[in-house]
Length: 141
Image (cartoon, rainbow, N blue to C red; front, side, top):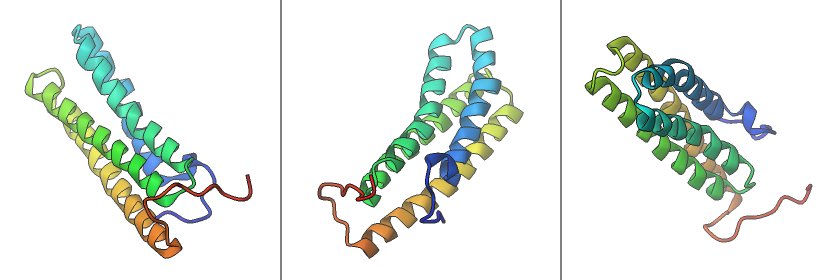
């Protein structure tokens, strides 16, 4: 569960887990795909893994629980895309089973934390009486 005192997206556990996944993809998977000349697949998995953290960060900057949750939903979609691409890489014998399992562990951890954060956002929105209407702007900006 995320604390209300979180000031930057870099403090979010969901972002941190997504970052670990992105670093894994960029450092462990992408070089293999480049070496095998699987450039399209390489670019796609790099974009999808980056999209996880980008959407969490962008949502955090919205200052509205439900708007933030929508961006986290986009991040979760990208996270699932990363898993599908890892499965593709494994099915096509582009990566070994150990790399696939490590990637799957990163996926599972990120998904668990992201789902928890999204639940917290929805509960917080309900507690604040926020609806799907226009986001509020904080007064301290």
